[in-house]
Length: 98
Image (cartoon, rainbow, N blue to C red; front, side):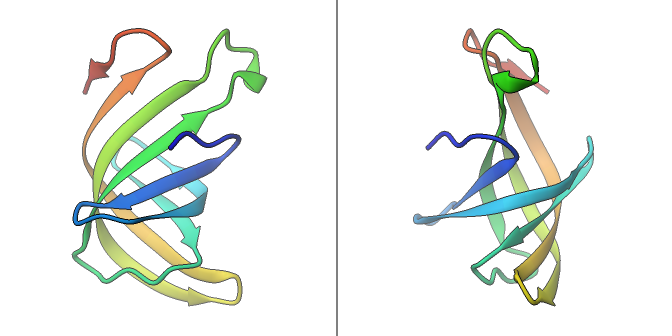
């Protein structure tokens, strides 16, 4: 489930997936806009792909587990403020944990 550009793929631990657009990313969390409503406290498995269009040889993939901390109703969907619980990073080679 790899995506391009600034898109985040959020997959529920219990199954299913949705695609959201990331608006903000830090070492502690992320904020994205989703067409699907998630509940505060839900835990999700996410994959964020940083495209090779940024001058990289290969895309960088960040896989993480997040907990939804805030949900905002927006015209374009639902804003999700999520805390990153753990993550691993790969650039086409071996994953690196963080």
